[in-house]
Image (cartoon, rainbow, N blue to C red; front, top):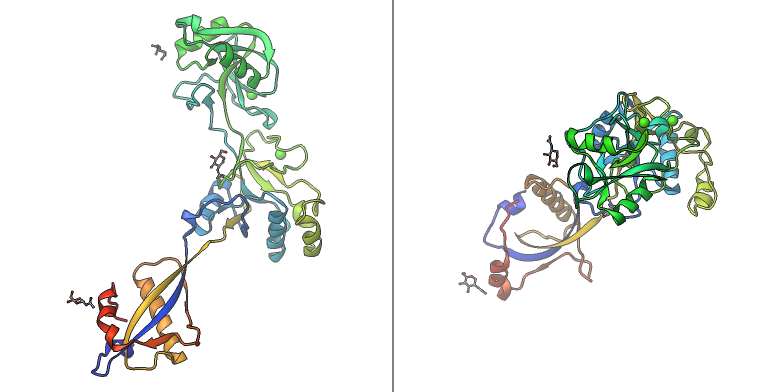
Amino acid sequence: MALFSHFNKSIQWIVFQLMLVTVFPSGVLPMFSSVSRQYHLITDQKSWTDAQTYCREHYADLATVENYMDLGRIQREAQRLSFTSEAWVGLYNDIDSWRCSRNNDPLGIFSYWDSNQPDNLYGLEQCVLIGKDGKWRDGQCSAPIPFICYDEKYIDQDMFKPYSDVKTWTNAQTFCRQSHTDLACPINLTENTFVQTVAPYGMNWIGFFRDAWKWSDQTNNSAIKWSSGNPNNAGGKDNCGYVVKSMFSSSYNPWNFFYFGFRGTTDVYSGGWFDDGDCSVQRAFFCQSLPTPKKRQVMRVVVQSDQDMNDPTVKAALLVKIQQKLKEQGMTENPTLRWKEQSDGSVFYKQKEKRRENMENNTARVCEL
Ligand SMILES: *[C@@H]1O[C@H](CO)[C@@H](O)[C@H](O)[C@H]1NC(C)=O
Ligand SMILES: *[C@@H]1O[C@H](CO)[C@@H](O)[C@H](O)[C@H]1NC(C)=O
Ligand SMILES: *[C@@H]1O[C@H](CO)[C@@H](O)[C@H](O)[C@H]1NC(C)=O
Ligand SMILES: [Ca+2]
Ligand SMILES: [Ca+2]
């Protein structure tokens, strides 16, 4: 810009203020309990994992759909693309999260699963049983079953205390923590054999358990609105969640949504939302992006020029130039720039002669545009 690269004898000092509105990249977003997610339906079919990779590359993550506001937005996005099929969202069953009740230590290199176990039968099994044969199986934590505690005051086989009265896994854990140290977690074959030896019955709770369904973006367990009877692991390895197509076949009425969905009192769409499916199946999918909080920053700039800086054309041209400069300097966010007007409507004012030096000293950076 000739304006700024030429410094002639009749230089004026002009000060103006520039309002710089910049935004954070999504990676540093603070988490909000209530966010307005924006959904993006990708109709290219992908496995759940590939869909997750795609969403994390192009948006923020696979979609989390928690409430009726989310439902309305996801229905609207489907309607925009006339989509009426099934699509992955960010739901997954965390089947590899086995860990020990005591200290939450993850399952180490030693495990002693029976063949075809863990199988998460009917999608309900998140706690570990040991059999009289010493083999492990996953079972429903809510089932009342005998259990084996661990007591750190003893050694060898005496560390493991069997109880033949039946309790749910959680009640057994509470009991073992009160009466001994915790539930038993055999960590090598020797210990496993000790536990096997003391095991009173065919099946007994031990201390291993795992998490179940989670959102890809780590949204904390809100109540997941499964469709009736789901998740049921009907296919035997259904560890990923998708939105059912009936969600899109009912016609979306934004007016109804405003009245009922917003208040959350009446289901706009009354069916279930999700089903569990085999993660390797290719489906369309919903990505989400999150709103970016704006950060406003005011920049004070001194310009050397002999032109009328309050000329709208000059002001606009300078704004474009500054935007380019910020990009060159590596600003990846796309900031919105605008002038901050003085009360008289002008942006620039001519610097008084006597303040010139002062101003010169205070200008931290000289930037040639
Ligand atoms: C099994 O683990 C216990 C506890 O860490 C240890 O004392 C024992 O030596 C281990 N036994 C074998 C055979 O690794
Ligand atoms: C989820 O909940 C835990 C415990 O309540 C909390 O520490 C964590 O920050 C929460 N995570 C998110 C993403 O809200
Ligand atoms: C500006 O800086 C120069 C050199 O450091 C110094 O001599 C001069 O006194 C400063 N002027 C003001 C007004 O501070
Ligand atoms: Ca099982
Ligand atoms: Ca199912």
